[in-house]
Image 1 (cartoon, one colour):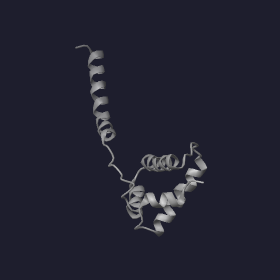
Image 2 (spheres, one colour):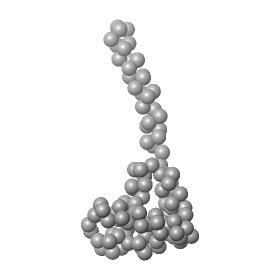
Image 3 (tube, helix red, strand yellow):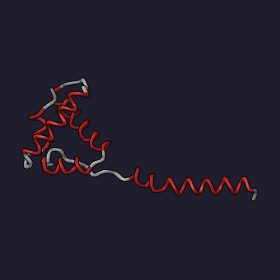
Image 4 (cartoon, helix red, strand yellow):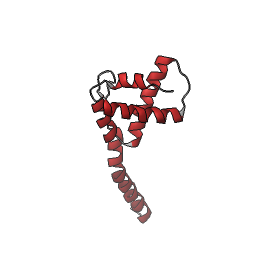
Length: 109
C-alpha cells in the first residue's frame, strides 16, 4: 500500500471515529411532551434542563398551537419573547396548573 493510500485510510478512520459520538447524540430522540397533561412545575423543570435549541422548539410549538386555536397567522418574534417570559412567570406562581391552560391564559398579544 502506498504512503498516500495509507494516509487517506488513516484519515478516514480517524474522521469516522470522531464523528461517531456526534452521530449517536444526534440520533437520540427527546421525550414526547403531552402539553395537555404536563404541569407548570414539570414544564419549568423541562425548560431548565433543555438546551437552547430544544427550549426554542418547545416554545415555538406552544406559539403554533395557540395560533392555530386563535387563527393568528403571523409570527411576531418580540411577542414570542414576551409570551415566553410571561408563561414562565405565571408557571412559577402556579406550579400545579396545566401548562397549556396557563399558555392560553397568557396568550400572545
